[in-house]
Image (tube, rainbow, N blue to C red; front, top):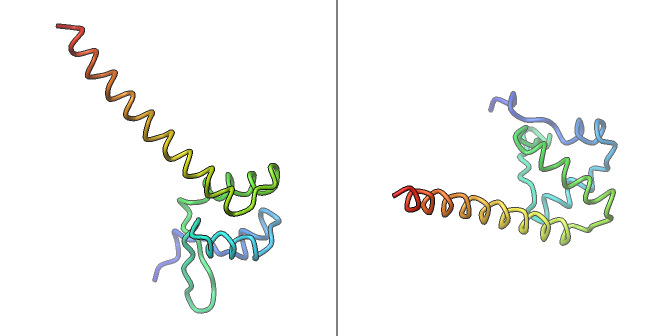
Length: 98
């Protein structure tokens, strides 16, 4: 498997000064997907922004994994509702233009 789009968990730990147990906890709680190739754990690069948010929640707000999960579920709901609101506004605008 080509690992060009992946970064190792050990690199993440070094770069962000986090313990491996933090990433294992995120994986165990289902917050991130970690793949193992030849006894090395990898995370896809597209999830780095989410990981940084999770680390800030963990460090700055002292949230546990359940709290991080709750925040991310709420953020997903907010994003969905914003898209729905924009869609509704666009449809309404078409009727107002008539």
